[in-house]
Image (tube, rainbow, N blue to C red; front, side, top):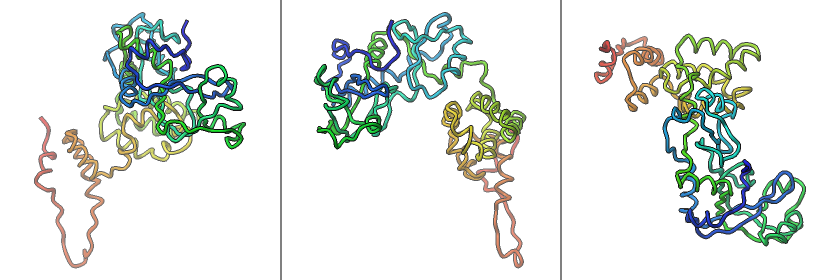
Length: 342
């Protein structure tokens, strides 16, 4: 039975089959005090080849996998319980043994970009300007393998680097875990299919469109007691990014203060949803700039324009009113949005 840990034995037959070039093993210090082996490649194209295999969907529906087993890649940006619930709707079983899986669930966190610590749950990682040691906490590992260990923040907890002799690591570290190598090989061989976590979640019957009634209900919950806020927190990730553009924009802007601090700001599923609806951009639009955005992206409708235009009109500021009369009139190119849609 294969373990879920990223620290799988490095199989150099598999490394060669995947054409991973210019490799070198390094040790990674773990929170348990053990040092585990990972692989570095000097080749950016080799690194990208493996990441592409792990990130690219090969199927766009999970309907054909009823009764099959699925392995969720580590560091998923959605809570495991939510992904599992969506899979259970299709009678798909989650396994921790990737060798038993028929399907791999991928996501957008395959590569970690962190210079402070080697993440022990990341399949792949990019770092730069690191030091290596083979003494102290790394000595036993070096004696067994002749591999140096990467100094990171986990070692800083109980040790000081100035107490040991150091070498410089390659300036740009491109780290590929044993688990990444093994799964990439299964994908390349066609032994498993790959589906994105977005596809899994969107296949769930729990996904719902945000209408004004639902928006008002959730907003009321967000302004209620702690239990109400937590219930709202479970509902928000089920809202489809394809919901009505105006209702979604107003919902996000009206509740900015709730998304910026407290329970919502720290919830993994909420962060995922905020990314999918492009929350950061939405809340920075005023009515006029949102009209421009919707037109540019071919999403403007007559109904949406009629909802936004009055707000724009209220925001018009004209001085010298004591001396002059002013007339406000839409430019001709916007007049078409006032007509009834067929």
